[in-house]
Length: 179
Image (tube, rainbow, N blue to C red; front, side):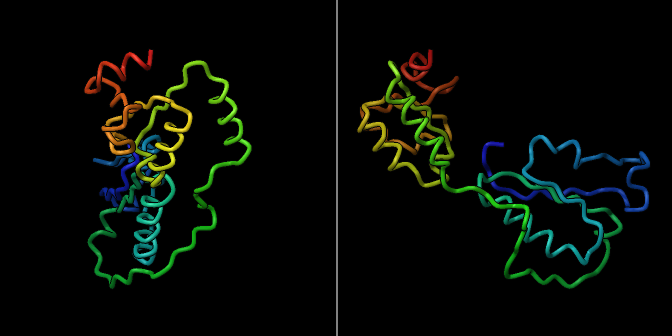
């Protein structure tokens, strides 16, 4: 998913023929399920504004990612007044922002007892504004850092513990550290 927030709007056949294998029908909700945070199949224009608000909220909170809104063609052609809701409440969606204390303690223990620790830092560090904490961890424990391309901004290039990004477009030092 690359943690990029976006709302994708797709067109669908008319509501009356959904599920009948109609000409140009595709189960886009099912097809995209493995790669989106959530999918909506719009059933009524009464739900449109609420659906858009939910979609943008879900896409941009927690771990950011894509959300799909599939709009049947008969709804797409209707006239309506668009009132964007000020607030949204999705009882079943409660993203976690704080680490589980027990898991954090376990991670600290594992790092403390590691013989060759290495921090692989990705874009989630940047998105969650945790770069200073990662640098502090690396410097306090003298742990080298490699990054993904999206996470390059997490640790300053001038930091001697930063070995650079890994992968095809990464540095030889970072790739060797991963072996």
